[in-house]
Length: 166
Image (tube, rainbow, N blue to C red; front, top):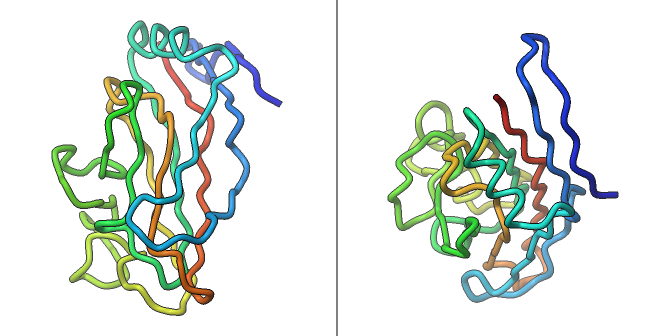
């Protein structure tokens, strides 16, 4: 079910919660070339209304998780902003990067030589997760992944509801 909901948080600040059709953990269909799998996200309220709400609020955040086994994100993944432009960051990292970069690169990626946990590219289930908080890029409108063409390569994405405050 998709919905638009307006409520208040514990500080009595208005919170708008935007649901979409892709909130469930979604298996990424196998294909090998970079960004060959694409999943578009549809918001119940319509993209224009969501963008207007994002632009009118104090702050917004949207969670994004990619679970991976033997798949890369560095050159193989992207998410797309409100204008349909590819973005390669997850969390509070440098937004101008051209290779996918995750929040763990600032603190605690499993392998300190990698900028995302998934770039370890082994047979262990790993995850990269974070919030997109840069309002001009919100909401997330699509995700794309690659490096999933072999039977032992697998991934799941979860894009959470968009939360806007104020």
